Image 1: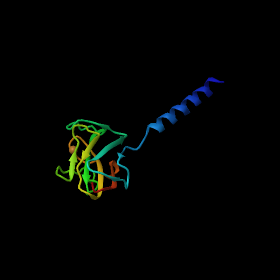
Image 2: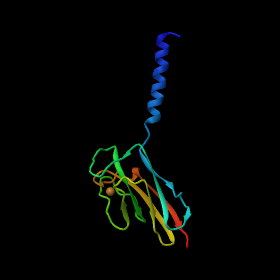
Image 3: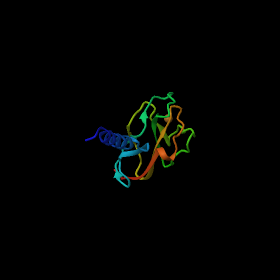
Image 4: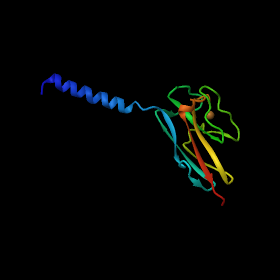
Length: 135
Ligand SMILES: [Cu+2]
């Protein structure tokens, strides 16, 4: 094989590897699943790709922490995620939690936000519907 051909193949392989890693950042629920019926306390496991968990106060655009919004929805980009019973912050970098929920239907939103709790927007959120069964 001519050296130039070898270079072209190496370059093509490198391009493929780089494209494979250029994932769109997103969050998702590893559990529970969409439309799942669960029992309280509900164990939630958060998934994240394309960004990393970082400490509160670090404003790197690559970093942030999870939030759970109960029966709310995604927070617009740049807007502060409230801190109340409906909006739970995981500023210690937690990737799972357990929620006490009374029986009924819920929308749970996982929202990623930066080191100042400013939302990364709907693109970095995921909403699922679950039903909490009677004990
Ligand atoms: Cu926060």
